[in-house]
Length: 162
Image (cartoon, one colour):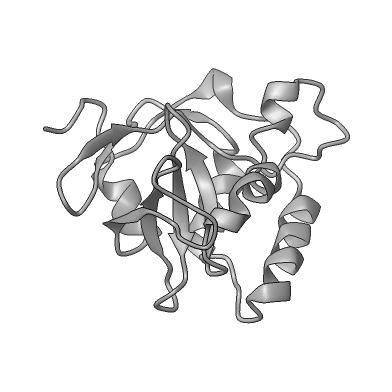
């Protein structure tokens, strides 16, 4: 499957510095942290955009849409508060107490759930769906979506999957 974005929704001012700063933050608790190179290539090209091919299924068969990918924009150059609020670091700082130290968000779903990378089982990280309503401090409520980022991107669909 070829994925598609609404090209008018990309977030300007991608910042490798913001990405590096988040990596340093993650390494405080998780010294082995490294970004999946496939994700880095993707996010630097399709920064913070809204997908047209936005539907995915979890491994258990539940179907969900993605609202948009989170961003690594230079916070000093972005004026739109909504876009600033959808930065990876901004979202992670809001929910990190309900994630494991090996998880970080990369996309938001309608209703406040997030797609996250899960490094619990090493590299490449698995893609999980983090449920905000079921998660408690120190007890994330998650479901596996894909074994890696490439598998995830390849199963996205423009129509809801039943």
